[in-house]
Image (cartoon, rainbow, N blue to C red):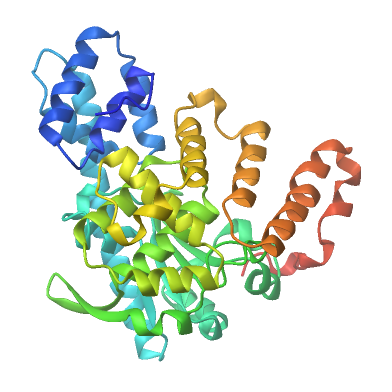
Amino acid sequence: MKRLFQSPEMALLHLAVRLDDFSLAVSQAEDIIRQNRINWNDVYSRSDFHSLRPQVWSLLKKLPEDLVPPEVLIWFGVACKENLFQQLRNAGDFFTVTDVLTARGITAVPFKGFWLAYDVYGELGNRESSDVDLFIDIRDISRIKPVMKELGLVVQDTLTELKEEYIFRELAEYNFNRWAEDGLRLSHIEFHWRMGLRPYRMNVRMKDLASQIITGKFQGRELYVLTPEANLLLAVMHHGGKDRFIRLKNILDIARLVNKYEDLNWEWVLGTARRFRVEKLVFLGVCLASVVTGVRVPPVISAQVSAVGIRRLGNNRIKRMALPVSGWYTFSDELRGWFFKIRSRDGLVIKVQLAYYTLRKIIIPKLVPVKWRHHFFNKRILTVPENKDL
């Protein structure tokens, strides 16, 4: 197996997501631990950031008892049990919300989250997530808040200062929380009607996915879900076009979809990706999935996945994943992320639009005094103060 990461801590995470030869991954993990002084706090923090604690725990449990400090196994064990409980709560929240929405004539289908864990990872506890992601028709979004209020959920505080028309026009999700009396967040529900901010131009709609909605079954209950093809496309858009492929979990999602569903309808995937100028992101996602996890590249796209430009972008992402904690989310890191978003999209018009957005919203505001920064943002998006409690 190729050593992608020089840090022994990051190398252990890499071995935890290998899908081609797990027994060999365990053997190599043992060698790494015996030959290096492992910073177990760093292993845990990186596993947390990359949302891979179930995978790392599975790897560590296979190692000889003397190699991993007992307290480390306890850290991961506790986190994984909490994640399982969280996924069970998420599944419960999903049915609570969608039962009411369905009664109102509103269709909402899950993507990512508990359904991907159940359908693609095999068990709810094998994939980390902290919320319920639902894809809905843009025409139904204005009807969501009354339903959420009825169920005891409130608009996420970061959105309460924005006008609804701005949220619907410029953003891509409408988020709601349920809080306990002690301030603990019990539920987080996200409604999506496209992938990413409006400038990203990933305006895939429910009508574009209509042919990809099928019936699934979870614990004896039927529900509407997306086909593997649609789940793959949305994962590429969300993890790559929006989140820049910076977490290993992003890559593992794609790898598991490609690995489980060998007969994917690539004609639909690529045709739809081409419409939204994310074809390069599809090839990059599969490239990273192959390099990082060892999954086989489907022959129908092997030539595109092996292209020099795709490989170069993939190396760029692997370097980003290897950054130490201190390098995450700095201005330099953010700026490189926007350059990646520009380079990874198809079409000159979108590249120019993203470049303009980066210049106006990211770079220039950092170069001017705080008192002038309001000139670079839309002051008309804010609600009046009395609407803050909605």
